[in-house]
Image (cartoon, rainbow, N blue to C red; front, side, top):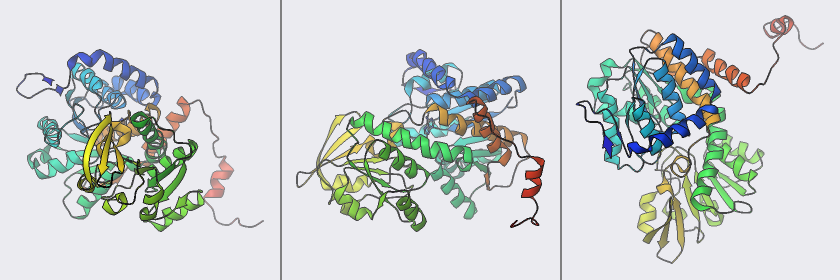
Length: 425
Ligand code: ADE
């Protein structure tokens, strides 16, 4: 590990020599992120973040680098750490260090190293935090409460993080305003569905290189991420089975044409299992005991708690690394189960996360929400929706970048929508 040697550690990355490779990756991502590029252009002219320090805990990917670069163009100082021990792209981290970002991230961290990096970000006294999973916010609110007085607000990127923050709000623990970027239309409809759908399949294929056509592919959870995974797995020719606890979502999956059954039944026939529930111990001992020899287990939820690693380890008599991100667990009866990416998010640990085109919208929301927080008066400590104007502006810019034109309401149509008198004619 190499880092700079100032008093306030400036960065810590795996290998500074990877920077050139990182710049090429960032350039490639940037080509596919036209909305964020436009925002960067405006930020360079207006400098809305001059004198502002941002503290970010995000997956350190080429797309995140494009976001950070927009912040730098806007005049911000940025401290950044990874939001998962296995998702950092080391070449990108090296490039960011060269750009002057206080980046503390490398792929393959221990839990202690992971939280050490979060604390180094807090050392830089952020005015605004950006989180993906709420580990930065929860550390500030527990171990580093002295940093609270400096923070004006924050943003949260993911479903799991928003749920955690809403729990903090409900219990009165939340001490500053958070904008739930995840809940913007231009985020979850595209990032959670098409982003997770494609990148999860990508991760499974990179880790295993198996054929999906004809396989029984079990998706646990039919939220936006699960919907995307099921859709894309079906597109590859898999027989998709959905498991759910929510009757409305289960019904939707049925009407979308998927088989729906409890995990206890799916366990017996599944060949590939992917969890995307945001919950804990979704696949556990009693399910593993029923699984076919050779079953593959992957997780696409934020934390590595959806597949019980404890149960898998208890059932296994031995473990081998077959290839990168593919571990074989041999059970007492000789059956073998295969775990991808240590049960961490398979799309970021075994692949490169969502494609740049969807991150363009998610991160455009991030950029505009950070600007909004900086420019607003300090808001009461609650979890807020992304302002509608921001969501719509992102959609408009994306359509423009895609050269898609849409219609506008006529005056007559606007009037029709706002009156009640005219009914059946
Ligand atoms: N989350 C999912 N995909 C991502 C990506 N490519 N970059 C940053 N965060 C992500």
